Image (cartoon, rainbow, N blue to C red; front, side, top):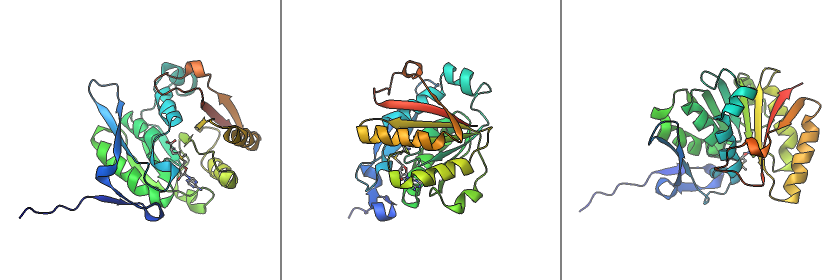
Length: 233
Ligand SMILES: C[S@@+](CC[C@H](N)C(=O)[O-])C[C@H]1O[C@@H](n2cnc3c(N)ncnc32)[C@H](O)[C@@H]1O
């Protein structure tokens, strides 16, 4: 009789239980030959957050460019603290941890097991520390987080009902020293309008700089991708 090994399952609470062998992999090249980060994702969970968006991949690519370093981070990423909001799979944070940032990737509670799985699978490659934590926008739990050097909002603007909470958390986790990086996928007029509204909401607090598309690396670039940097005024 052959021994039966139970298949590992990620319990994503209200989003369902996902068999680990049903996750599919995205390989992200690094600056070392034949070394790749592996991001595990799924479209079978009941959430938009469990797979990698083109804009998030594009933002990660941009953070590794000379243009990013010159304009926004002359000392480089190594040793910087970074918090990613609505991280989903955690791609931006995971790549940043590889490059030496100390990162906390955050999302709603059901996504924590997927973020933790992605940390565990890449842990030995990280030069910085990485943690996965629950953070629901607008809640007081931001008191448990220190203001980071870099705050990432990748594709977090898509639901008008939580824009106010997102702004509240963005304000709570930034000072005028914090570099805020956001990206969006302007695929529909509805989302374009929502992003305009978000930029109106943030404008009393933040200066927004749109990164010209020609400055973004082309690998994950699509015409609907938009990347911005924000600084407290
Ligand atoms: C469109 S997905 C983006 C995922 C990932 N950042 C990416 O770009 O690949 C938006 C993410 O925001 C998270 N989110 C939505 N509302 C939230 C809230 N109120 N508090 C915290 N996270 C939230 C979702 O769970 C989801 O993971």
